[in-house]
Image (tube, rainbow, N blue to C red):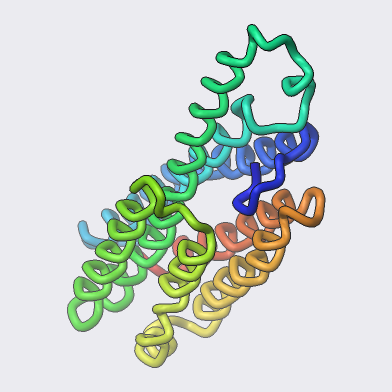
Amino acid sequence: MTDHGRLQSVGEEIANAVSHGAGAVLAVAAIPVLIVDAVAGGGAATEVFGVVVFGVTMLLMYLASTLYHAMPGGAESGLAARRPAEAPGRRAAGRAKAVFRTLDHCAIYLLIAGTYTPFALGVFREQWGWPMVALVWALAVTGVVLKALPGNRRPIWSTALYLAMGWLVVLAAEPLFTALPTAGFVWLLAGGLAYTAGVALFVLDDRIRYAHFGWHLFVLAGTACHLVAVLGYAAG
């Protein structure tokens, strides 16, 4: 099911699962590279910690999304036409998918905060570093708690909070631009723009088939840009 009510077709859910499954594979491959790069570059313990947090939250987000979209129970298939005796199994599958949907959405907050962490600890350090880490993780925890509460899962406020957290960086844009080489700043900005552009497809996925898959592609592009920025400029 999309965030706005329409059931995804089987083909859409396959595309959704495969696309973010590729992201999970990317995350698994990226984590050791991030650690080795930070250590080899002489990064401090906090900088190594920052890239680990980024890698782990990246993996959690893509894994949660893949599992959610791969689960039965929310796709337009032959389920609706099956015998009434099979309805309880269908309801159980739907409930399980709803749980993983919540985990998927909660993991987005973790990735946003996880993306801030290596820059806060590796680029800003003392002046902006820990206050920014505290702020973004407080917002992430708030988002997760609210998302998990029954009756508080409306996509409008959660999408707004995703965007607000993502662009919170503008508060520190000047010191970030000063501390990062131009290329690093461009990669960071490109990732934010990719995520933001993808939101248009995210909000239209109840009207346009495969729009959610398109959203996934923009998310992959945003993560790839931020991975380049972290590898090249956030630690070591």
